[in-house]
Amino acid sequence: FKQENKMSKINAYGDEENIVMTLDDWNSRWKKKHTAFHLPKVNENLVKHENVLLDKQKMSVFVPLCGKTIDMKYIADKGHKVVGLECSEIAIHDFFNEHNIKFNKTKHPTSDFNIFQSEDSSVTIYQGNLFLFNSDVSGKLDATWDRGAFVAINPSQRGAYFGVMSEVMKVGAKYLLNTFRYDPTKYCGPPFSIEDQEIAQLSENRFTITALGEFEAINDRQRSWGLDSFTEKHILYLLVEK
Image (cartoon, rainbow, N blue to C red; front, side):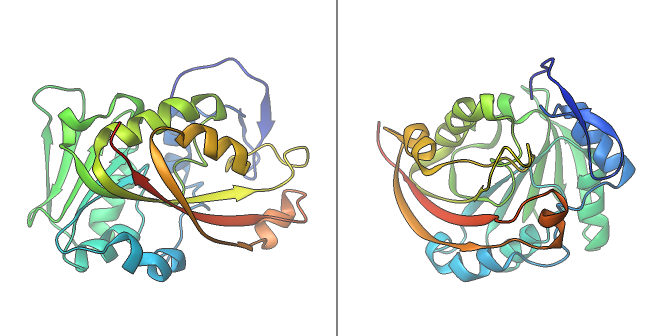
């Protein structure tokens, strides 16, 4: 995440932070355990759409900005290879320790990424800046599960983000993306709202798009932000030959 000088806000934990989030902001949240975005169970939308996303055996599945999501263990337990990407070493250690998974830490030989890998090699998490990540680091990947990464990055970086996604995946790879839509005049994010038109523009000449559905997902947490509507949408992308 690049550093930008923007206005700040008081977050849900009473801390002042930038509206434009930086790596330091996210690392601070993990250090302070300000991680209400973490789900204590497998994401129900991954379960709902897993037969669409994970339609082959032993797939390599990218989970960007993975935190300590339980989704990674769920995917690995299905026989797939998980490739996570996370900036916070605290989150990475939490994931392995909370699931009693033995792991090793090494330095990537040709990049600045640290590599945390389970002893059975079913889960590999790269620690570093997502915008420096590419297939030279991880190899080309079969699929991506994006529950909270795209909606967390700064809106000005969305084009660069889609560039990373399209570069790191194989032609024909599937990319299941979770997005949100709400009134940005009432809440500034993150997670950030995005309209369908911008999604179409970002994915043009990169992906074909299939909308899998949307629903009203507002809960008490979002109501506390001043929102009265919080639409969650699931989109399946198929990477095309360029």
